[in-house]
Image: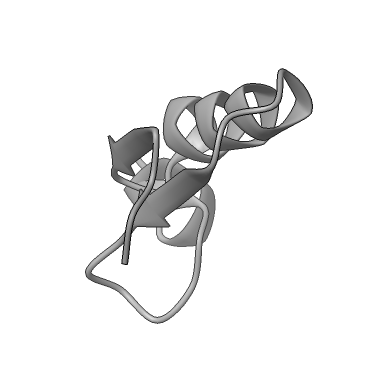
Length: 46
């Protein structure tokens, strides 16, 4: 798998960065260890 941008973490900053990179024409991938995006603060609470 080849990509231009690899974002580690699917929290609020991570998935936003991956989406923006794709909007700008990059092949982006978001790598998250949990089954759902959102990060700890959104899914569980800080």
